[in-house]
Structure formats: C-alpha cells, structure tokens
Length: 356
Image (cartoon, rainbow, N blue to C red):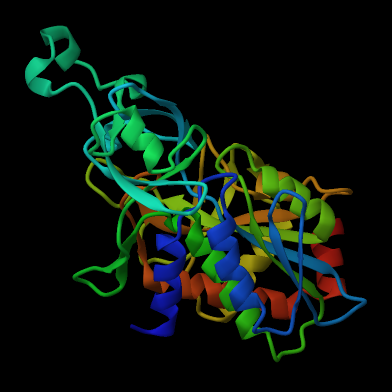
C-alpha cells in the first residue's frame, strides 16, 4: 500500500473520541517529529506544529480535528450489558447491529455489538418508529456484570465504531470510519511535509485539535495560542450525489469552499483569494453551505483580535456513521490547494484580504 494510503489507514483506524484523542495525537506527533517544525500543545490536548518561513510574516493556521464521534460507557447492567452516552452527533438508525470497540483505561479493546429489542417482539406501535438510542445497549458477549468488570471495563470508558480502511472498486473511492476528521489531520500533515524544505512568506501553524465534535473546544484554545492572521479549518463536507439528494457537493469534483455554516460566514476576500489560487493552478473546487453544524473555523476566526477564516472541506458520503466515503482525488487537490495558498500568503496579501 502506498505511503499516502498507509497514513490514511492508520489515522482512520485509530481510536479517539472527543476527550480521548491520545492515539491520534501520537500519530501526528510521530509524523511532525520528522519535519522542520516546533511542536507544542494546548492544555487540553491539541497538537501544534509551528513552521517558520518568515519571522516577520503573517501567522497562518490550518487545522483538522483529531476526535471522532463515538460513545462513553455510563452503566454496566447486572446482566453484563453496557449503557452509554453518545459523544458527537449520532442518528439512531445507523447505530443498530453495528460493531464497536470498548477501550479500557489500560488500552485493551473488546468487541461489542449494538443491541435492542428484537423486531419480532416489538408491538405494532413500536414498529412504526425508529428505535430510541436510550433503548439500545452494547453486548460484549459475556454472562454478567462480574465478567465485564474482570475485563477492566468501567464507567467512562471510550467506545468507538469499527471498520477497516478500504479502497473501493473504483480506487479513487476510499471507505473508512472517522474520515471526519482524520482526513483533515492527514491534510495538515501533508501540507507541512510539502513545505518542509521550502521558504514560505509566513509562519505556518499546522494543528490537530481536540473535542470538535462536542463544541469546537480545542479550536478555541489552540487558536488562542496560534493567534492567526488567517485561519482555515480542513474538514469533511456532506456529499449530495446519492439518490434523493440534489445539492452542490459531489465526490471527485474538488474541495468544497463553505460560504456559510452554523458557526461562520466564510470571509469573502479570503474566499476570493482561494478561488484565484485554485484557478491559477487548475485545481477544481466547489461551493457549499450548511444551514446547521459547522467546523473548527467557527472558533478559529474569533481568537484574540479575530482573523479572516474559511472552511475547506472534502465531500464525504455517510458521515457520522461507521462507513464514510471520500474521493482520494479530492483529498489530494485539497492538499495541493492548501500548499499553494501558504506559498502566497505574505504580509501584503494578508493585509489586502483583511482590510480590503
């Protein structure tokens, strides 16, 4: 498997819900340590790589969030089943009969399946409605509570979806859990690698943030440290090229420029500059917007004195489930676009964007 795919496989298969990003952070740290960067952290776990091109240049922050959606154990029943709290946004219909890993404080993983009352035993009225999350439970395949405790599982343990990284029938299409947002983390790393031996007219901060899925928390603390003049969040967008949908975002047609989401009105002058750079380099791009939801840019643009900000996204099918799908070509074009942007964001350009 190619290096690019191996990194995506490792990042997406890593376990790390909000507040438990240690494994993902370790991968990012290992990759950053091979580069000409200064590594630091905020106090809640975000990792920051500082790459100085020009000490007097503007401060540019790009970020991907390390956390994925998942569950947290809240109760062990006498019969050995686990009740849980969802971490991040889940739709109940994608959860049932799926496999999950329960991770102990020692780092051991135990496979579980999501159970509920069998459909054969549901009353007619119950059959008409989706199963409620509060009626679901995790089944470890044990007899009782004592067996669960012998495994070292306790209240507060992390639970993650299970799926192996896969290249699909069309090799441009990739399937994995947690492309939201390990694909953004990978993009940040690749941009740092592309610029490792290059002079660029700014100070670049490549960041892996924590706890995006529960309120953009790491973005708030990390961006306060970076104090960016320009901020770009790299995340997934919602592909709308499947039956029943007719929106703008399509897999394989380039990075998504979010003009609006629930936490940010994309900065117009920055967006225009991104479009200019994309067109100069023959990089395809798409427009998109989200009426609800948002990205880390919603906090990044508010740091200290504020910064022009934009969300640059990769169209993904079936986000917030076990099985998300992206286009490898979209990922590569996102990395290319970010790299070319960083090369051009000098002080004069940033001032024009900010004060135009």
